[in-house]
Amino acid sequence: MRITYDKEVDALNVSIRPGTIAKTVEVAREVMLDIDKKGRILNLEILGAREKVGARNFNTVHIGGISVPMLSPA
Image (cartoon, rainbow, N blue to C red):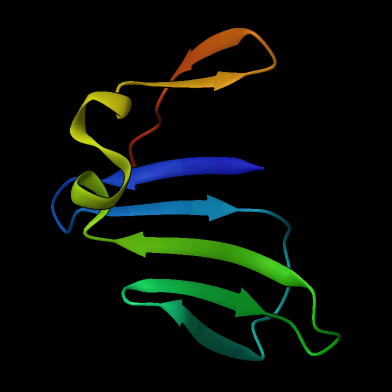
């Protein structure tokens, strides 16, 4: 799993697994899921993420009690 944030477009992306996207479904306003042909979720994208997630939550990701810095896209 890879979590990135693109501050230029205010988009948070969670890449869950590699694969070929068959369709993208908007599950809520500005929240999209990329799905493969078997119905598995590949990516979650949140547009307008600072407002939805909260600006103070963007510097660090907490996973199982470990804090790691948020990655910016390369």
